[in-house]
Length: 117
Image 1 (cartoon, rainbow, N blue to C red):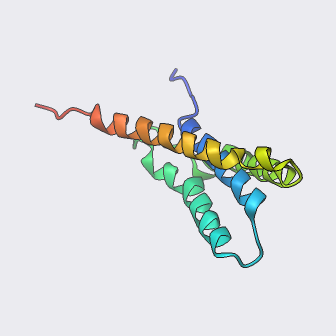
Image 2 (image 1 turned 90 degrees about the vertical axis):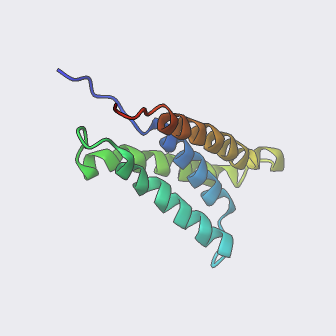
């Protein structure tokens, strides 16, 4: 029996920090809020297309944990609005760090592919 494991953990962490920053810094009709929302929607849905063809789960079952992660990120971002100024900027710091790590993981995954002879 094949072992089932969650394959999108790196982008889920990225999604958590992105939604935390979105909820912390959201302004009504702000252009930055619009861009963060679009980026969060892309990070929420697009990694589904990167899954290998042989082990694709149902979209709804794959999306559920990511929605929970985004919801927890939104909740923590709203709570960070009431935090001191120094603590309020941590989501963006961790967002940049997790984006660099996520990029490294995906680029390494692409570079380790070898052509069949």
